[in-house]
Length: 470
Image (tube, rainbow, N blue to C red; front, side, top):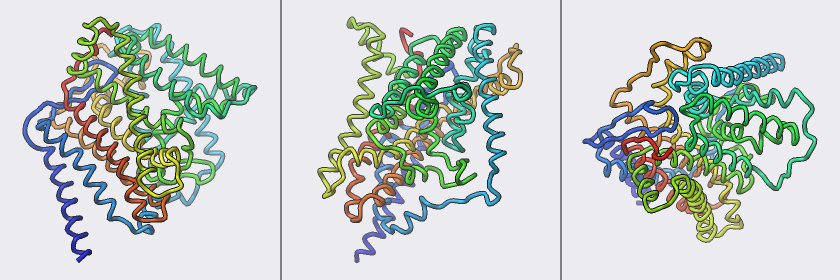
């Protein structure tokens, strides 16, 4: 009887999952990609009734959690997240060194060209090497490469190349700070991207790159390159955390290895404190914020608040930092609720750290939804910029995406959440000896995931607009 009940529940969950995905092909309402960067990059329309796919998006994540709760064979779960294939021939130390040298030279060359051409090239963002490479290249394309393929930023990082070439590490980094400086740095960079002219005026972007380079190299020299780029540098921490989702890894110990996408999140134990949790949360929040302020509804809300007498930048700042605090608070609350609901010696902080890697899968899905269409639209300009950096095109080419392309945004968000649910499920079974504990520990976190899902799907359902007062 129990077996039949479990079977029918599985069928119900599978049916709900299929119905949720099929409903994405239903009747009309506009959905669009809300990506910060170059204006007019892509506006993908998807004919879907908004109430239907918001409801089914949350139901999909809920159904996935229901399905995961029936996968209780620890050996099967372990086989999934530990599966790995390693290149038998290995990678020689000489080849690794050569790749790192080539990557360092390439990174320095691109940075130098971005600064030089930002000042001397045309001050039109759609043909500027600096703007195209930084936003379409690094912000969109390279970040996608980091979580879809492999994290290679350590080799390409131009600031690490410079800092490692000179004496460094004169002061020990205060370990009590953890990665909180990187959290502040990511928040600051997204604020600069949103509230200044770096996306529209190449000379301003070049100045920002120079200032960032001075601060980064100086900091790395003072506290040491390894400590700075692992704990403080926002770009390095941003890309490294995304890179944890990637299936491919190249390192000195294992050589070239391939895992299932996202499964390194289960076994990597690099997240240790609340600062690391905050990094994962800020990756989710910054995309939510940028998505909101580039919608018509978000713009209307900001105009209304400014209309009652609040300075526009203050409105943006309160929304930005307040929203991050709410996102982080909800996640910490889920950890506290879990610690109270189950009989465990794990503290709320332990649980928050344990389940934080699942947020990185959500962030990857969000990023892909926000920037894939943007990247594809500007890919001809990016190819031209990288192949002929010193010649600006007379007629810049921007691809117009078909209407169905917007449907991918919904799929990316949902796939990211489904992967996050499996990562949380695997983490629970690694942490708790009791199956009941493992299942019950996930429910508060899944509730937060459903909230994130519905909010993200709502944002990509809204028509885009330029942020007001900026």
